[in-house]
Amino acid sequence: MVLSLLILAASATVPVTCAPPEGAQHVVSNPTIRWILLGEDGHGTKEMPLSMADWVCAAAATGRPIIVGVEYAERNQAALDAYMASDGSKDARLALTDAPLWDPDWADGKSSFAMLALLEWLRTQHQAGVIGRVIAFEPDFIEDGADRERQMAKRLESFSSEDGALFIALTGSFHARKRLLDAETTPYPPMATLLPKARTVSFRIQGTGGRKWACTDLGCGEQDANQAGGEVRKLTILATPDGSYDGVYDLGVPMTPSPPVKQKR
Image (cartoon, rainbow, N blue to C red):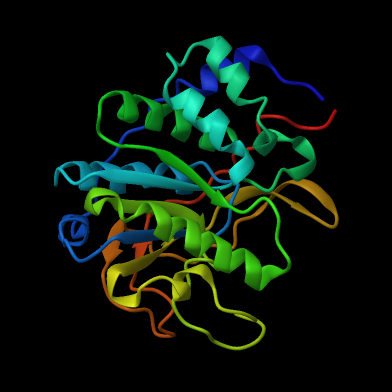
């Protein structure tokens, strides 16, 4: 396994900018909304994780307490808390990347350089008082897929009661589905269906074409991102035809792959 300290240091300082899409303010300012789920349509890209910054900035303008959720196992919580409280130095980043989530044997796109850059940006927002905690909401142990969804929903719900906080979670598009469809697409209730329906909004994030970094039976590396979104950056607040999402956030650009911070030799 090789970890380049030079690349690690550079990646954690990649500028993360935010530009809330038109219409986002209407969502984040609604006091009845407690959970915003951002369903990224495939892990392992640069653009999808960083689009979360758009929503955090929109929510920050309301003055509401903000909690951010990332789809990491709960055993990574201590490392996340320590990094949020750190000075973001090289030593702090190295301590963060010692956490289980960066294990190259489990590289699924969520241990990417883009996610590391997002965590660094979230650290600066935490230190500035813009956001509260960053929560790892995936369970450490599960009985099956349905149990995983139940535990994730329970963890999100346990934190959103804090001072009327708005919980913004970045997750896979399956977990963000708000409707059971057929057995192939939703064989059991996704996380979103287990949260209070009237207080939860879910958006599918999608790009237009491009590539992603992922692992398949054939190995790990770059592959087609399978994106069919619009070519204009736009937030559409309208339920998707199948009723799975409350809207779609088109990023309007092709996806580019973001490899894992740690890879096997």
